[in-house]
Amino acid sequence: MRRAHRRVVLALMLVFFFSSVQAESVVESNTLVSISDEPLFLNALDSNEKESLAIGDEGSVFLIPNDDPESSQKLDPITNQDLNAVDFHPAGNAFIVGDSGRVIRYDYQDQRLSNVSGTGLVEISSLTAVAWNTNGAWAYIAADSGRIWRFRSTIADGEMYALENTRESPVSSIDCHSVVRICVISTESDGIGIIDDQHEITWLGGGAIIWNDTECGSGNVPVCVAVGSNRNVGTIRLDDSSLGETVLDVVVLSEASGEFSKICGHSENRMMIATTPFGLIDHRPKSEESFPWFEHVDAANQHLDVASRAIVCSWSTSEAEGWILNSKGDAINFIPIEIEDPLLTSLAGYALAVVVVVSVPGIVLGLIFMNSPKMQATYNRWRRRRKGIEPSLREKREQRRKRDRS
Image (cartoon, rainbow, N blue to C red; front, side):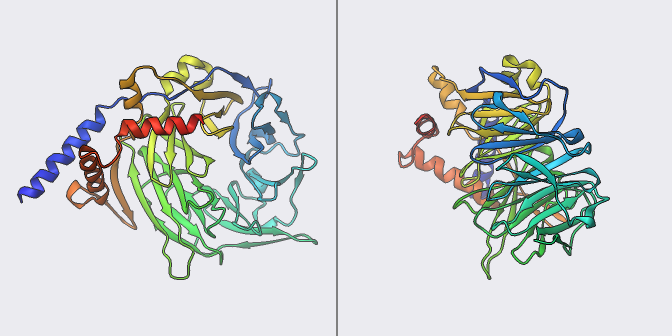
């Protein structure tokens, strides 16, 4: 009993310690460009290593060079329907989906848009998500009705089949891992699901959360991450082996600012969580750590008009530099800032505090310290640092900043 009492006291001390840390931006912006002189509203963006595609209302599609957004070009529109989601094929082309069942192909070789034939099953649907599976053989297309189809083009026309075991709430996003043969589905009220290499859907839980977006890791990080209402972050640990089991863990980033709207891949072990109001959180899927990156107050001080609109997505041009695009079509860069005050340097490196929540179908359990392996692991790391066995958070922060600059 005495040991349990000490654990609870320590848990309260840890919460107090984390809540006393004020987040600081570690990047700033000194450049603003607009990708269009015309009024527009953008809904989604996807990036590959060289370029990004931004899509929006009234059929608007913009091709954005990742390292030079000022050279963006508007592609000739082929529809006036609103476009809602886009995904690059591993070979370079992309699929774009939108209202009234529109499915559009972007051809990277001639930078041209064309209608995709053979998609009659979705012609009256409002399409909300699209993703190519791991080997690029099939595209998964989803609607606000909750239905999901798999599609591939053929020489004659196209093949399209409805998936079984779908739910009824709108699908907000689908993304597929680049190595592990699993795709992740996020929905507005039916939780998180996965699609395996046999096109079968399994639901993992999280139905009490409105999930807004999902992003899968790349390379050797077998993880996808979903973001949702009330600052929830879901980590989906992928396992496509015959005996494997993919699991969902959910945490609440209690010290984060704003609500989580998007999550965008930047590198093998870095994603950016976009917040409302305008801001970014650096999330590391491998270690499941989140750090302050670009605070709303700092973004607003530097570009007030840009920060008043929602973030569509962001992309990197190097380990610590990149761009953020808002729904109005304004892009601002981010670059590292030098923090001269050692105290601020130390504070900026602290991970955002989390409250652990485990999501299983129909049950949400709050875990206290004595039953939380993660909090116990945090305590053990703290003890090792006290004994000089493990680097301090400040030392880790300095090491990370040096890696980002190199």
